[in-house]
Length: 265
Image (cartoon, rainbow, N blue to C red; front, side):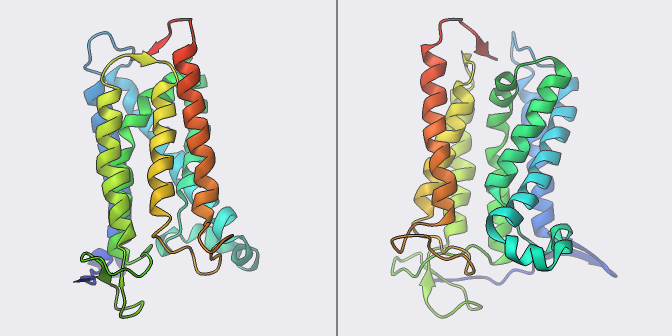
């Protein structure tokens, strides 16, 4: 049995100014995506140039932050938002939705594609492998904040979160760090290291994330004000993630059945 180490969520404090670990995880995510994007532009024959990566990451960051916050309000906390609309701006208090962030990123990538004259899937296929390390960093931020813990467990790595109760629980945010961060990155990076049919990398992204998140939802506790939606185990995460799996499979199937020979590289 493990015990949560009770990490201070504030990394640096200078007078009234506080820099939170969670915010630094976002900074790491965007810097990691930028660096990986620059690395990918060195591939022989790629259509991407190093000078384009800064703008691409800017569009991505804007979509992720705005979409993540708005999605959290709409999917998980709309009732409280109606009573206190200004909560939308208090990002430092936590509350970001992955699915909302993904929708925001899709909109941002569509705008970037239009701006640069590329197709939407050429952009998302390039961007997808740059994302998982940032997702992993975000889950580390969740762990530091002491949030998104799981159901009680008797497994040897069960962790006691003293601010919750004395029961060992699944450290579900660490499961997500491993699956959505490390494993996800390795799969996407290796798969996209060779030219693939356009839309295939984006499809694999949706499929893998959907499967990993759907699996973790079985041991992760849902938000208290939402609870389980059906059968004592279906969560909002399940509902939002299942379409990703289906769409991911459809994208990959369509990509490999196309005969126009278009590839992402």
